[in-house]
Length: 153
Image (tube, rainbow, N blue to C red; front, side, top):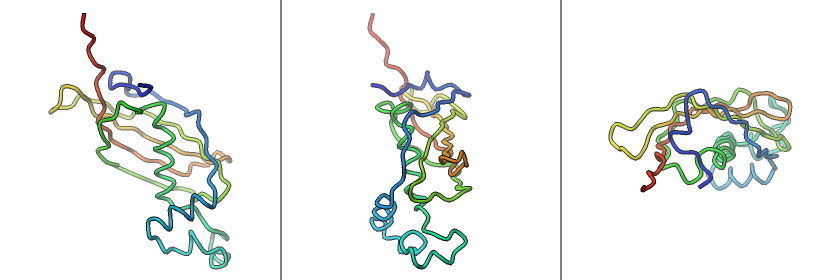
């Protein structure tokens, strides 16, 4: 498994993820439509001309999913038992069609599980930036992570 185990995820560990992703109009429209979000701010180019943004902005729920998804291969692929929830999510700047997103993940906390000896709880801080190095998302995510399997001797 390429994912990291609980023991590998110590507080202070930081990973600048290799994958970057340019957000397309299709990404935005598809997710907005699939989630039944009728907001003109995501869909209607004409209606958004007179907003403070002057154009459509990318659906923040798509951005959150993208940010976590970018982090998976280098952190939790195959070693996550499950997501436990998000403590905090912020979107300090909007994302527009054509923006390229890069993500940094930091381990904010890690502790053994009180109820499961085969796992621990890790709090990840995912921070996303656009191509102008503006922070566009910050999310604190708690995940139940596998402990490295013991090898029989």
